[in-house]
Image (cartoon, rainbow, N blue to C red):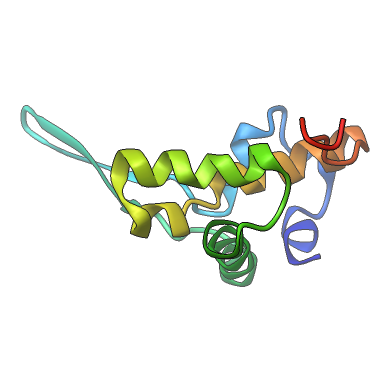
Length: 113
């Protein structure tokens, strides 16, 4: 409900990928001269919705909640970047929630289909 309240309207964004940026879940872009790198999460937007998404991502990763594809996603992140980043990777959840809300479809998973 916190994410829905933060978005206010499903048609607010043209693409669901913009929903993560609206909540401040995209990395800061740091540039200095010829050096360019991605920084930490920008933390713009609704802090409570971001906190709820972090908790959901942590629950999916640590407790293996959700369907098989939803469970495998943080495991792949943990394999590439480490378990700390897998626990705090809620941008994909925000994008999925916005897409589900905009289209009015429930979460479909390969194990349940």
